[in-house]
Amino acid sequence: MEAHPQVAGSVILVKPVGFGFSLETAASNGFQRNLPGQDLRAQAMREFDGLVHALTERGIGVTVLDPVDPQAPDAVFPNNWFSTDAQGRIVLYPMEARSRRSERDPNLGGLLGARGFTVVETVALSHWEQQGKALEGTGSLVLDRTARVAYAARSSRTDEAVLQAWCELTGFSPCTFTATMDGRADGQPVYHTNVLMTVGERFAMACMASVPDLHERHLLGSEIAKARKELVQISLEQMHAFAGNALQLRSAQGSFIFLSEQAFRSLQPDQVRQLRKHGELVPVAVPTIETVGGGSIRCMLAENFLPLRPQSCPPH
Image (cartoon, rainbow, N blue to C red; front, side):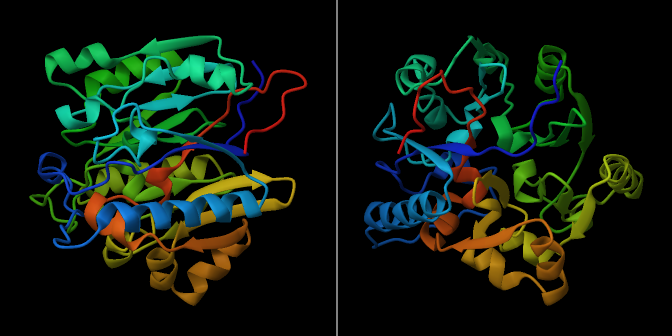
């Protein structure tokens, strides 16, 4: 089988039509904070439009979808309920919060097929919800697609049994560890792996300090080294500023690393120099989505690896 590309040139986003603070998801997401008395939906839509503009300006293919549930407060984070691959497969994932299960669109394959993409099959893992188990897409999974390694931080949203089933389906090997908000063994788990780390073509950025078990921290570093990725380490404070929630994308114009303005401001000059070897840094302001939703730029982007049908033009 031909090696799967690590970096996508196309993404799928979902409009934040029903955006708001969710008490249900905040129970396991230590990054969420409410901003009462503000027009959150209008602010979130402006931030969303700014990200779409930054993507299109750099030649990244963008597909914007309306949420299947217009009341879903977290629909702006679609990468949690589906993923795609270059073989034309869509995977639908089990979600922890009931309020997020309504985001999942079983007709996604039809929607993307109508946009000119080739969808060979859709695999649903959502039945795991009946057992109270979740695996929230590329929030739970940070994937090294060329080395076939799935990095996964254990949490109530990332169940190891579902992870094993996913690895058997896709041929990945799991690299599991525990990460906490304060780096202490008894600390609150980091809710999603993609908040503490990202993996690009030739680099990985990770908050190693969030992994309290030194053996697991060593294994995590060893996997990154084995894949010959340059490791950019970030601090706990930078993780809380969403520095780990970045995503490398590529177009005919070059390689880009998208991250929030808050994340960019948190980086030190040496970290910026390291990252710029791998692509242009593209900061985008999403403060409302970060604060109220508890997720940042990477959470808003579902990579689209589906092949375009011949003579199909990339969507706008």
